[in-house]
Length: 190
Image (cartoon, rainbow, N blue to C red; front, side, top):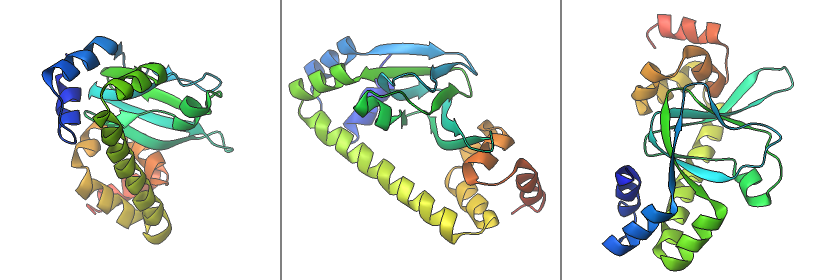
């Protein structure tokens, strides 16, 4: 049941069978129904979540009372509110299932324990965070440098799976424009 996670870790670092067994013994698989939440504002984020099946989103409610999606996570992606997880202060974010999902939860204590027992996990998480940070920088560049149509085109070319799985209004929120504008872009077959 942890095969996807172990395969993902092994893409970055070497694990022995004993180390893999230790990881599996410390983690828990959680099922989440579509529209259910892993995190809501005011709660402290308790875990870093690896998506083994399904699709989730991280979002907040902006000053205009609109949802602003900052991250999606589908199979083999991680999702969490690092600010809340690290500081143990209440989150301002929601983490919600867009589809029925299976996630593997690493709480902070278990993660530290596993890193002590399996030092190469620290390298794994460093590499994952570097990639996530680079993606965030690229997204910020796109927001400031690309037109709305260019952002949509780039996203649809890089992540075609999302177009079939994410509702249009959520994709528009993530890309920073209205669902109506997204409909116009899609109608033009950009």
